[in-house]
Image (cartoon, rainbow, N blue to C red; front, side, top):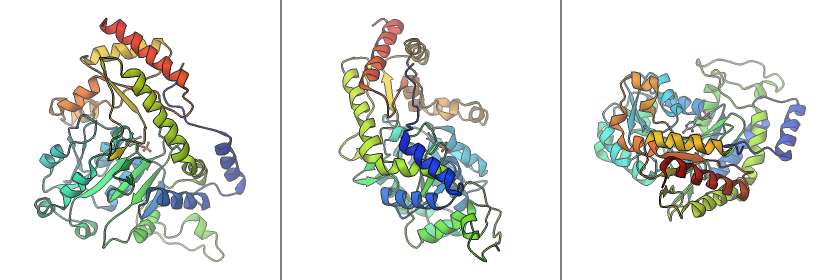
Length: 404
Ligand SMILES: *Cc1c(COP(=O)(O)O)cnc(C)c1O
């Protein structure tokens, strides 16, 4: 069986994890702090806080901004549930909008969805392909929308406009106009979950890049505390002589990253561009060239003059098929011992959101692209021979289902 996306695990990672285990320091400590510094240097943003997951990071930032009941957060209908669930956790309302042909959030749809209750826009770089960030960043600075903005918290007053909190769970390493994802919006959150490009088993990072008059370093310190029960000294600081006394300054959360996780990340980030990205790009290019000869194939957009993907998921679409034909093709592909997937089932189709009253009919593009989409295996150890096997399996499956 060709799996879908097993993590890359080699001796370097194993050695670094074992080193951590033997060091006597396994929770948040020196390796997490080092990983944060490397991520800041990598992304080119101002400061980085590592957390236990992207979900926790997104929620922490919504709460930092004071998002609560009665507020609205705009996000694409086409994403993983985490993007919307964290909004629900805060008591706010997720406002779904439709997407472009590249699977990313539509800026025109965002414009139509902004109201006086909108506090945050959460663009998602689907499959690793950066959204239209110039347009999105420009939009929230327009007087029309600034005047509409209702600032309720201190942070909201300070920013004076809608916050852009980008869900970059897929897109660490993605590039937009020569800048890396992390450095493109106010706040960007990476995921290091096991299936993501760069993994720490579970984990995430908040990239802080807030404009003046915010001081990203002091926000880092505040968030560090907020992610540790609101305790004003972390475990490492408390080990210093005579430093046992601490205070709780707010009822914070518990979503810190451990040094065991950071150990994996430290190895990966140092070879990420030269190794992981190069490998994944090769896989994307080979799939594209092998599949381009078929008239029924719609290839994904993953690079142009302005944007470069992080090559996270290869989103193949088959032309002129229905959802059930797509499902039948997937079943046939599995018979050839190849694991494929679908990214994503649009949120309005999920029971929880359906029951809240969201209707898929309001997001025709999301449904249209979802119904024809098949995600192909992409992972570090995938060989050219494997890629040929995947393409053969697709070819065979489409022939059986569609008899073209
Ligand atoms: C994986 C994923 C997340 C959540 O990441 P975790 O680190 O597992 O919390 C959020 N958004 C998208 C689009 C994802 O694919």
